[in-house]
Length: 213
Image 1 (cartoon, rainbow, N blue to C red):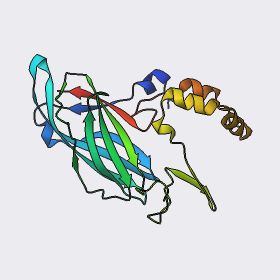
Image 2 (image 1 turned 135 degrees about the vertical axis):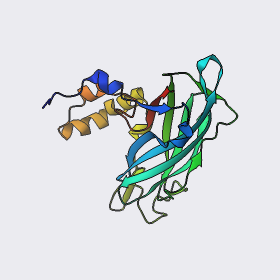
Image 3 (image 1 turned 30 degrees about the vertical axis):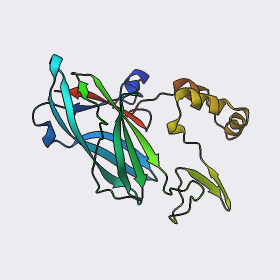
Image 4 (image 1 turned 60 degrees about the vertical axis):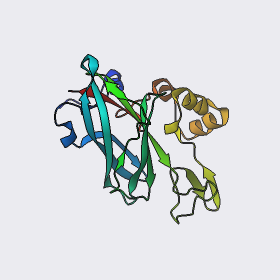
């Protein structure tokens, strides 16, 4: 049995793929996975595509659906759209929402054309359980993704998954944060050096898909 750890180069290149060839609309393809509120879930997509110039494919429609595999709180899909400036599909999800709901990606009038082995990116965003920022207990379920508490003390969490590599490093290097982390017996030197931004892979929010047809 090989017990050697996966090398860093392999971790950096963890991706998934989407098939855009004939009858692709008959497949419900895996595009994203994560865990929120202790619930592990996967997002799948049904892609409809047609031929475009230059040997590329035009993505005509994407219908997304979610399956919650483990956990007590359902995570559901709220909305999705294509951000032309960032060249990424933004996916909004929320806890304690209907997991049977399917959504269509809003292309916002943009045309998505992609060639073989080119990348399509998706970025997941999480909505709070409560629409009111000052009312984290509105649903009688404490929003552990956005808040922490110690008795009557409630405080907002820093959601590191939404920060860039540079922002995480700067936050962890803050004197107060660094002193507290070190007092708990942690050495973050290696972590600061090895932070990466891509998932499926080493982080939860973004995913990278390679087109195949």
